[in-house]
Image 1: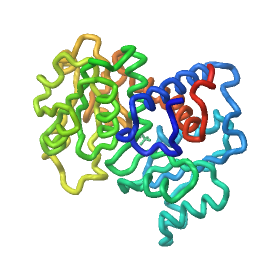
Image 2: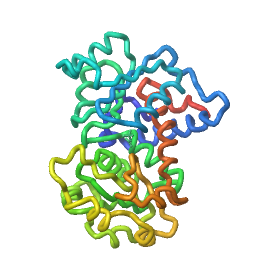
Image 3: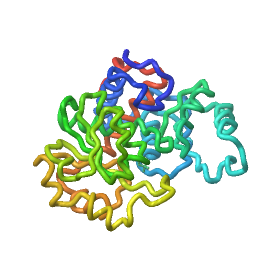
Image 4: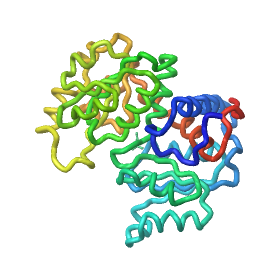
Length: 312
Ligand code: CP
């Protein structure tokens, strides 16, 4: 069947077969989403609880919509007004939610390892919606799903990830996913945000934008993650943009039909010029759309669904 996991915590632990099983399931659910009644009863009677301890638009809404398309009941808690603010531990919070008959937990947390911690405590599926700078597995799955739609396969494709790699869970999950799927990945940005030790993950590191972009099939921009930085990694945002922001001239350094990606949220005019974000080469909103089908697939598989049994 290709999937035997209760939880989705990170891409690092997934095999290529498991990644492809998510893609196969997501493809089927994407077909379903084009129907007049874009809903299937596979999670009817189940309750999905969304716990977001950090801000989110795309991931939170996509998980909520995905669960609803699968006919689950969904509760999204605002963790700022939950009892964690009164000193309750994360473990107590999730055990109480489980005691209220939650069937699946989706969690975003600032602490790396938080999703693994609660997955080991609970007997129900836990899906990691981002844990600190560690992993954001469904983001990488939807990014690679989008590239697969564009190129057929990632095998041999050359991809640059440009920006704040050091503090990015999206970068780490995409490095695992893209390299497992056979892509050649180059990380590029200032040395303070793109340290050489990333080379141990099987990628190239460059601090020279022009040479790093040459011959790339795709470039993924990442925003500067101020919320995880204690000190500025560069003198000013203007200086970052002048050296590493993607603009029209620099776009010509890539292959002519190269794809522009961004996981969002975008800081227009900082890491990317507004006109490029909205250009025909941009697949940024396709990434968001694919996030719905990919998260339907992840929810379905983690609750024991059989990829071979889903049809569009
Ligand atoms: N890409 C991403 O995780 O976006 P959100 O923070 O809006 O969920």
